[in-house]
Amino acid sequence: MRQSMRVLVVSAVAAGLLAVPATAQAATKLTAIVGPAFNITLKMGTKKVTRLKAGKYTITVRDRSNIHNFHLKGLGVNKDSGVKFVGTKTWTVTLRKGTYVYVCDPHKSSMRGTFKVV
Image (cartoon, rainbow, N blue to C red; front, side, top):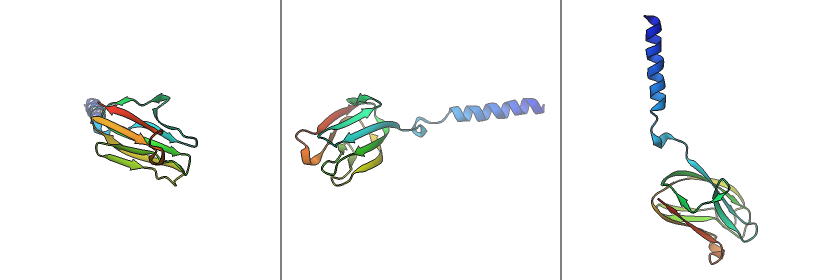
């Protein structure tokens, strides 16, 4: 009887671990790079971001110049690395359905990108 009780307990624990809600899953990782030249990108792995699913994302911002910034704007999101800042920052954001813009504010006419969240 003890053996069957152990099997029951182990089965219950395993079932509980498998029933982790989707909100507890790790955020998807994105990488943003601005500078040192006049370039700005947002990528998932090696692919440029043009479309994402709504959800939680971790964005690693690599700001490589004190004349640029990486500024992400959209529904409920307004994150900015700062123009004078040089280094790496990590943001966790929740993206909702809609259009998002990332831009270098001092050079917004040429350094910008957009993506849609569905």
